[in-house]
Image (cartoon, rainbow, N blue to C red):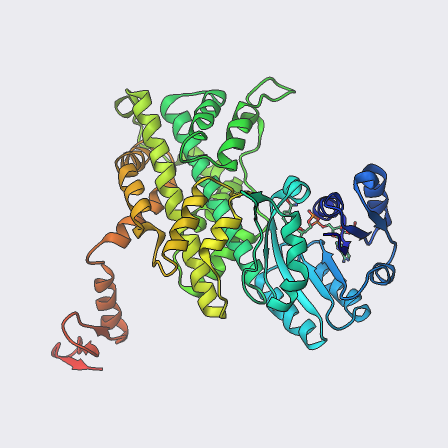
Length: 478
Ligand code: NDP
């Protein structure tokens, strides 16, 4: 298969995606607002394949046969709108415009509708894998119409990562579905990294291990059911020594985590959908806390900790390490389960037909959260497409149950010794909240009725009720 395609926006992602397309034998017309980036790409990698540089969007459009296919890889937000506004008038009915940036899914819904009115197909495609993935095969999550996918899908599948011959690219759903699931993917990525960081912190503080030693532990974990890209690169980063000082690299990096916004968007959307994604939320808030330098500096001086050493819990180093592994595994399953819940809820809200099994399949490679474990998730959702929560599936139920003893010990130990482990702890609270036969929400309903006459339902009768709290405490039907 050899197709024609245009790519506009040749920073890291766009340049690598263009090279990936060219390496797959496609005819790729490349453009960037500032010519220097086009020249840099052609100078360094012009030999990668059939790359044709142009200086204007008019030339880009003019160099392609209809239906034209153009991928926009520019900064999300206003820049994307600016490029769409500039290129849309040059295109003809049936042409396909793909936005491969990290757009907010609501923007994608708006753009799809606006461009649809002009007869153009718009495909908001989530692309994950960073610069290496863009070049060697990312995981691609395209939204848009089925007609648009028929035109662009084969090309995107061709350049995506593959697992056992299957592309890590599938039509996720209409309009903003692709960017929605990419957003949640990034949210899960936040949660996964937070949990990894907590595991590292506990091994360091609890066992006094060096970063390199902890890197070795992660490398061993990467051979088991935690096997994943993030665990693999954790070992690499922890084992790395700073060139300048000879210290462990992780010790010379400022401990303030940054964010570009997709984690925050995931939580904002989850709040609107009423889906508890506590793992992702804790990760976003932990990053925010890390950045509150003044507050941290003030608190470090005056807030006392428990003043207890770790001797009791860490006497058996192997057992403690295994408990931390169990906590990481169990909390990770919870975080992924919550992320898939959000996808199901978002799909329901927006009328997207999202197949969670197919999504897990395209996350098995190419993307940042790629992991062996997603093969199992894919199997579960394929076998049980209507599964209410991943946690009740027999395999994950048993796996988490097996890990729960270590998980509980680690959460209790972290609390007793004053080590923050919000991801581990909130995942456990969620797990216990899910399995609780009676939730204290009954009391909350009682309080709401008491102060605001908000009414409540009864366990033994249909309808809504209100108690006349300020009078004789009679119950009346509301
Ligand atoms: P950047 O997000 O840094 O964006 C730079 C590119 O946007 C340049 O080509 C720049 O052109 C162009 N641009 C900015 N404003 C305008 C404008 N008003 N009109 C035209 N072009 C404009 O590039 P990346 O390669 O890092 O990312 C591209 C997209 O992919 C982003 O949406 C990003 O969120 C997403 N993404 C990035 C990943 C990553 O790992 N970096 C991973 C997955 C997705 P110029 O050279 O002229 O300034």
